[in-house]
Length: 215
Ligand SMILES: C[S@@+](CC[C@H](N)C(=O)[O-])C[C@H]1O[C@@H](n2cnc3c(N)ncnc32)[C@H](O)[C@@H]1O
Image 1 (tube, rainbow, N blue to C red):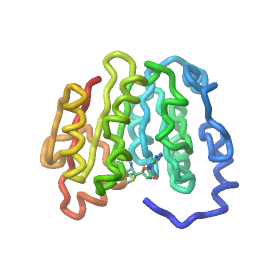
Image 2 (tube, protein in one colour):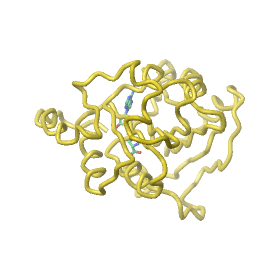
Image 3 (cartoon, rainbow, N blue to C red):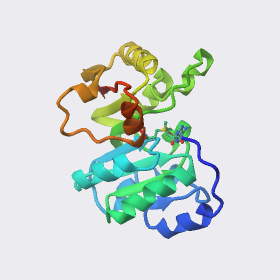
Image 4 (spheres, helix red, strand yellow):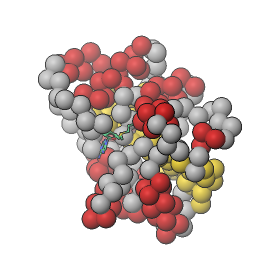
C-alpha cells in the first residue's frame, strides 16, 4: 500500500497523540513491559503487524473491549487513516505506532504479547528477499520470544506461494497449526473481519488463505 506522501499528515497526526505514537516520537527499550500502563489497565495484549488503514483492528477492538490492542504500521500517512477510524469509534483499547516491525524485539518484553495478527503482509516474491517476509523463521523466532505461553499468530493472505512458504516455515519451527484454510470465504466464517486488502483481493476472485499458529 503505497500512498503519495502527504506532508500535512505530519501535523495532523498529532490530533491523535493520546493513542498514536507518531514518527517524530521515539519508541525504545523503555516501553518494554510497560504497555499495560499506556492503556491504564492490565489486559492481554494483541498486536497487529502492518495495520494499514485500520479496518481490521478498529473492528476487532470493538468486538473485544477486554483486550489491549496495538497496531504497528511504518507508513504514517496510512496509519493516520487508521487513527481516524479508531477515534470515530471512540475506542479506548487501541494504541497505534508508526514503527518498523523489523525492530519489534526492541519495544516488547519477553512474554508481553498474547497474540500477533499478520494480515496480507507484503509477499516479497523474490527468493533473495525471503527474509523480509513476516512469516520467515527469523521473524518467528522473534515472535516466539515475545509471546506469552499459549501465544498465537493469526495469519491471512491471498498469496498462495507466500502461504505455502509460511506453512513450511511454521513446520520447520515445530509450531502447531489449527484452522488452516485455503479458501476462507468458502467456509462458514461469521467471525471473520475483512481487512482492506482482503476485500480488494476477494472482490477480484482471489481465494483467502488463513491459519492460526500456536507457539
Ligand atoms: C499489503 S498491506 C496490508 C494492510 C492491511 N493489513 C490489510 O490487510 O489491508 C501491508 C502493510 O504493512 C506495512 N508494512 C510492511 N512492512 C512493514 C514493516 N517492516 N513495519 C511496519 N509496517 C510494515 C505496509 O506499510 C502496509 O501498510
